Length: 173
Image (cartoon, rainbow, N blue to C red):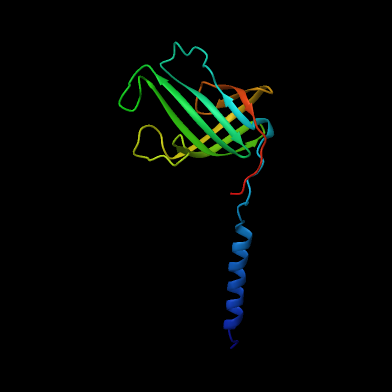
């Protein structure tokens, strides 16, 4: 009768350690310690002044976007002719988002969080939206100072014009 093959305790521990080490080194990578440059054509502040047919719309929003390297800050000024409550001031309110963006081909992915005007995290017990902001836009560059952001979840595109050009200076994270 042949004896079954068994690993020595030392060999078994060495193999287990090697497996764990390879799992951590292959599956994980450190986050970069600096911002990435982002898209050069987006760097700066962009503003939407109006929406086509806004006088006939019951609800609409106007956007102001600021891109700095791979980060964004967005303010959303919303208007409503109905359902005004204690959160709205005569049918108007502001919301803010901050986060990072990536672009692949003509699609811009903006991922972040709803926040307060001073960029602090928004309390989820307050008015309006809170938590994650995750949106995809199809980008159409009209001119160097005019871009169309067509949302995948909203039928009204954001036609924004450049109000201030900036240059990316990556900051440590």
